[in-house]
Figure 1: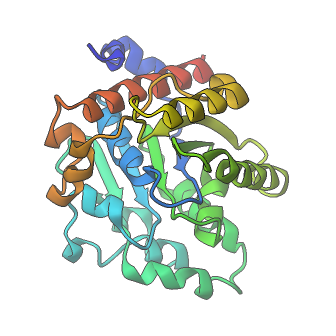
Figure 2: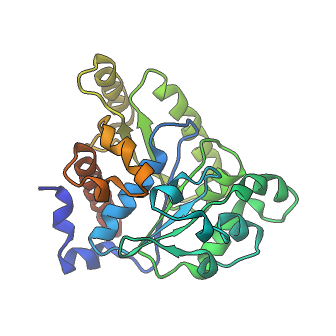
Length: 277
């Protein structure tokens, strides 16, 4: 049984839900580490226990939108329009096939946003301003960041309460995360003093591989309790799910990947409950 099950009671739901949404940025400047997979499946698991969740696809590649089955014809108003001020949150939101789960999709024009916002006042806080005005009805907002530390990611980190870092179990993992940690420190000092690391999740872990075990040991030694107990295994079903426009939890609920994301969601909710207490 998943540890998520303890959050299915009405009492637990009342504890976790705050007076405003908790916004988590899913970020790592390195590509291919499972950011989108984590954002989509964590959101799905939260929605499954009656949390109202909004996913913001802030990556111009639009993989989170695709993974949630959002057709391109439903992306005409997207995160680009939100950032440049051409649309409100309510105009950009698209319902997914998962009850309680909504998404603001990405579009190809989002790639131009960084250039267009260069001379705009408060360009680093465009997303925060939009969400403050119109996204108070959600329990959680999860932002899928692009694999970079540019203006789009800066907007996500300024808008976020905390950062979740997916970290692939490979040799160069710690070197990459050190850059992100320094960036978070700079943003905390300059723009968002309450920003924190909510947790680090190890992804694509292969228990048959000695290197994975070594990396996991190093990461846990360095970051301690910030690292979630749950690890996401290297699993072919996780890789297949996006091509069907489904989260792994809908594509193959019984798979090891789906069960791992259920357990991760349970850990995240437990940490959030501790913060709200």
